[in-house]
Image (cartoon, one colour):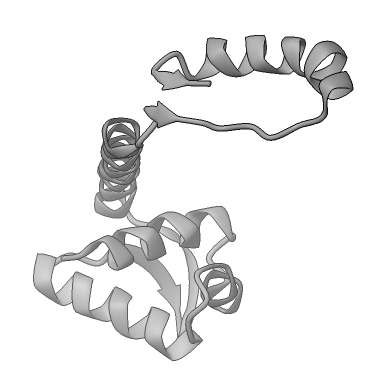
Length: 124
C-alpha cells in the first residue's frame, strides 16, 4: 500500500468513479490507475468498488471505510509536510537594502515595519 493508491481511492470518489478523470487529476494514465486499484484490492483481499463490467459504479462497504481512513492518512501526511516546512524554513538572517534617500524616508518605513512583523528574526 502506498500514498498513490490512497490518492487514487480518494480521487475515484471525488471524480464520480470516472477513471479517466482520476488519471487526469493525478497526472497519470488510466491503465496505471486501474493497475493501482487492482493491486490494492489484491493486497488487502477486499473489493473496494462496485463494478459493472469494467466500469466503477460506487464503493463497497469496505471501500467506504477505506476511503475514510485514506482521507485521514493523506490529510495527516499533508500536515506533516506543512509542519516540516515551518521548521525547515530559514526565516532568520540579515537583509541589506540599497535605496534612494526619498524612498528610504517615505516609502520604506511602512514596508519595513510589516516585514519585521512577519520576520522578526531578520535584521534589516
